Each structure stands twice: as structure tokens, then as C-alpha cells.
Image 1 (cartoon, one colour):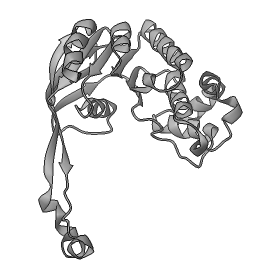
Image 2 (tube, rainbow, N blue to C red):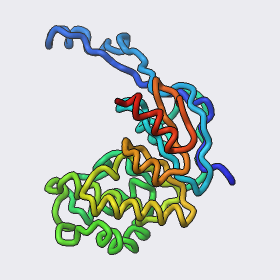
Image 3 (tube, rainbow, N blue to C red):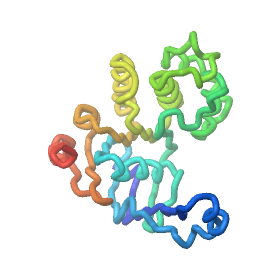
Length: 244
């Protein structure tokens, strides 16, 4: 089976810039020199794995372990400091609730905007517009600016866009934990159908049920590295005591 995603000794850090304290005076005197106080904050270190086409893989770890950063690297939003990342396939991602949405635009307008952000053509988005609205179950609110939407409504809108535009690789970050039970079940069914059709899914979740029931393989990230991988139930058994 060919490889959809491959990480080869990937390392990622972020600059942690610390401003001087002491109020406006110190900022005026030193504000343009803060770069010398920058420290590199290590997020991921020596990360290597392969994800075959058509598989569903879960990543678990404590908050701040680097799971969302890893998804951002797969999506191409970020670049590694070192190492190599290969991705074979069109990626759609739901990495942050409401990311890519504009609060003053309507739900309908945001579907088009979000679809373009994900790399789809306007013509393709418009062909799928009705199915996206139907899946989200937001027809009565679709002309309302999304600043009036609840977090659950935003999750439904975002997931509907990425799931109805037929990506080849789907990245999902905790969205299954948002919204009511009925919507969560609907998302799970979409993922199962996407799997059956040969799509590749990378899922970040703290839910043992999601990881065990949906994934073929799981990875546990701790202290910036992958410390366990393999059977989802076995990986969750190692993660849950550590998380507790």
C-alpha cells in the first residue's frame, strides 16, 4: 500500500518572544529590540512515521503535546525546522473551530470562503452548496452572519464543508467532541464512509471511543516525541494513565 503521509525525522520549534516588563517607557526604549530575548520553544522532535493511503490514524497526547502542530505541518500551514514531510493527495482540514470563517459574513458566504481557503474552486463549491447546507442542518440560519452562531453551529458548518467536498486526505482536530450527540454520530458516519471509499484520515482526539472505534493505528505523543504507536486500544491504554 502506497504512502499518503510520511514524516522523516521532523523537528519543529516556535519562537517564544518575551517582552520586557516595566510599562510603556521600557517598551518605547526597548520594544524594537525584543528579538534578542527570543527563545526557541521545542514542540516536536525527531518525529518519523508513515501513513498508508486509505488508513485512519489517530494521534493522542496531553494538551500542548504538539498534536495540532503536527496536523498543521501535514496541511502545509507550517514548515518544519528540519526533517522531511511528504504528502500525496489533496488535503482538507478542520484544525480549529471556525478557522477560515469571517464573522460578518453569512453562513452561505462563509461556505464559499472556507472552501476557497481549503483549495477548492468556487465552481466546485457552488455545485456542492446545497448538500453542504443540508448536511449542516443550518438552512434556516444560512443567511445569518456567523457571529451569531453557537460553537456547535460553527462546528457543523466547518465539518460540512470539508466532508462534502470529497478530499483525499482529511485532517480532523477534536471536532467530534463539539456539538450535540446527533451531530457527533453523523460525523462518525461520514468518517466511516470516507474510510470505506478509500480516503485517508488523520484524527486528533482525547476520546478513547473515537480512537479505538475509528482508527487503524494510533500514535501517542509525549515530551515532543512519539512514545508509543500501533494498535489503538493498546496505545490508549498507555496514554490514559499518563494523561490522568
